Length: 30
Image 1 (spheres, rainbow, N blue to C red):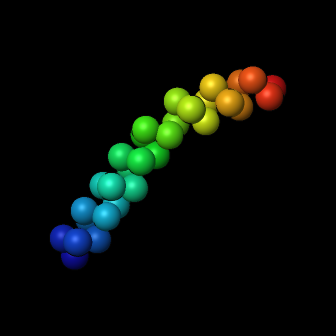
Image 2: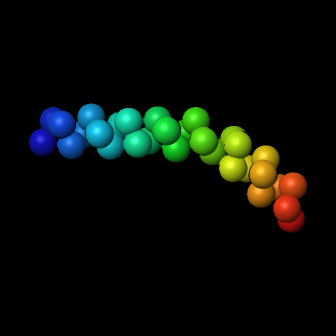
């Protein structure tokens, strides 16, 4: 259970890091 929580936190961290890049890319295409 703890391992799954840690993995979810890692995923969330990756999403937060990738979000600004995705936002800037999507605004360029719109």
